[in-house]
Length: 420
Image (cartoon, rainbow, N blue to C red; front, side):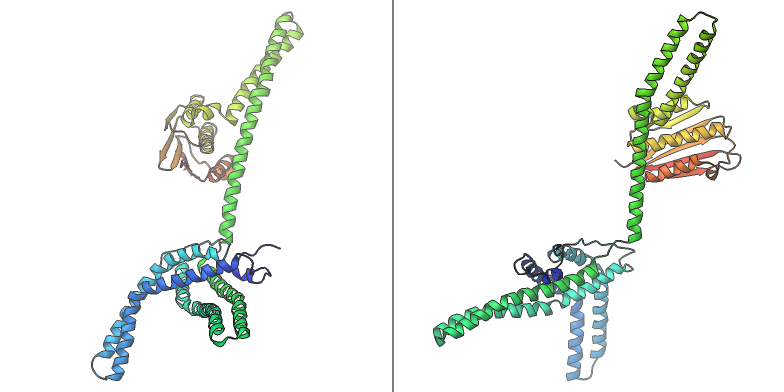
């Protein structure tokens, strides 16, 4: 059986009296009464004009005539205006305190969500409704106090009957009644406190929006997938660099040595020489592939150095204006991928003659922009490169913006959060 999480659930369990719940219920009831008294003291000022208005009307019935009705109306309007101004401002403060105090009677979480301003937020008016409940709480607190007074006074009367009436049976009966009332007091305290706590949860605790919670989980899972993808890219790069590339280097060396041992002009020498050239070409392509998967310069020196290396290897003249700051690996990877994709598109599709790359940090946002003077007309719907880049930017919490009118220029901009 799962343990109870609220007072009302604990009341239904057989071991209620020997658990900690009766003590929690008594503390909750005592603090509720204290909070109600404090609230009454705070409301004395806005309630004072209403009280005076009632007294003025009562005095008018005794002594008719004069301007008493107008004075009572003015006092009533003033009191209502003060209450309308004070209650919405006081209710959220009391609600925070009551959600903290709710832990005495309820082990569940007490979330709160606010929408809109103070007066248009439904949570404000639910908190005002709870204030009215808290104002009325002395009613049930008084009932508990009366029962507690009976429980305390009954054993005291035992001594009186022993010394005055000298009736042991009567004293024993009164003592038994006092002991029997203790569990009754515990159950009444838990029942009233549990009901009050249930209403407090209903009015003050807002359950999270399922759609919003699902959206948050989708965003988190997308970020986890992006991180896993980047980790897999690094693993592939490491395997290619440390294993495949080293074996290809060894193969190229062996083919070069074999070519030296064969007679010049023989068919075998021609075949080995061709294989040697193909191996060297493959080694260059593999090295470029490794750099494209996870650039070592990006990991070791940062975004600016990696972009400068990318610009140096581009057939276009590329001017780089970037900050030297280091960012998180996820941010640097997405920014580098954006620059690489934009420069590749400028060479393949835009017929550009030059490009400018800027990377600037403004506050907690890194803005990377690539501008080329090509023919423009880029359409993300016609290729998966820009679409995948937009997905990667979104997974990192950023966004991709692009302007590419017909005739150019094409501007690709990626904004990524980079708070440390």
